[in-house]
Length: 99
Figure 1 (cartoon, rainbow, N blue to C red):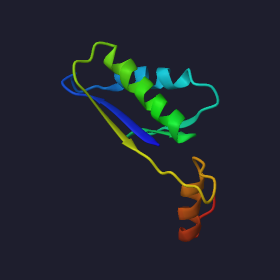
Figure 2: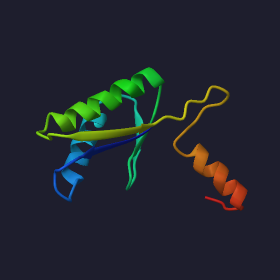
Figure 3: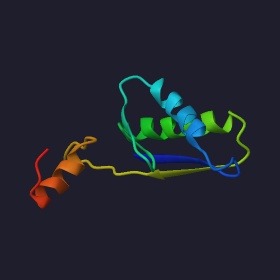
């Protein structure tokens, strides 16, 4: 899942709100995630990911934000395991690159 938690009307710097969302995520045991400049990628069971998304959303909302847009993108695959790196590695192979 890729998640972006975006406060609306909270100024131009969102880093403190992103940090609040990440702190909510860091409290989750055995969750692998990667923070990017445009969102956070989290891997795990779909039901658990949805609960984590809600926890991240609520953490930012509870910090005093009056309006919040949360975007979620889900890549759910059953035929083989997905890791944070597997999709990137597949594209790099197609490009002839090595890690």
